[in-house]
Length: 148
Image (cartoon, rainbow, N blue to C red):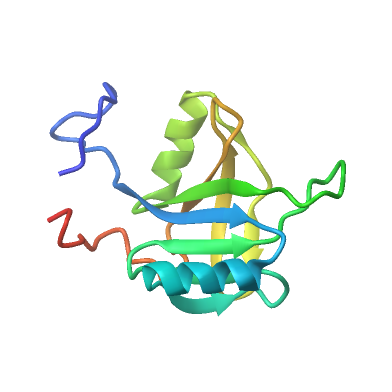
């Protein structure tokens, strides 16, 4: 059961469901870094973005290894860049995010792979929201053995 402290939701009106399903890091060499995560943790390569990004998965979470440049400096950003929640009701989460002051960023459609909406959290970190998920990520309705 998903726990929530959202007072707007009741037993009769449960909170819509969200699961972390996407983590993105940025590195100078996505291929080298992806190969390292595959060798060390046994992640499976499940796709790429056709440029400089590789998608890995543990069967539940999409782990994107990207090369993201800072728009102002042109320097490659290093480290964790953003993360995403797969949700069962995007419109409900858009309302909840707005109620909590999250700023909506431009939406991102990546070919036929997926669609996500981006929001800025209270600490400035980007949070992705997707009803359709990411390549290699388990759907929100599925529970892992650890979460069952």
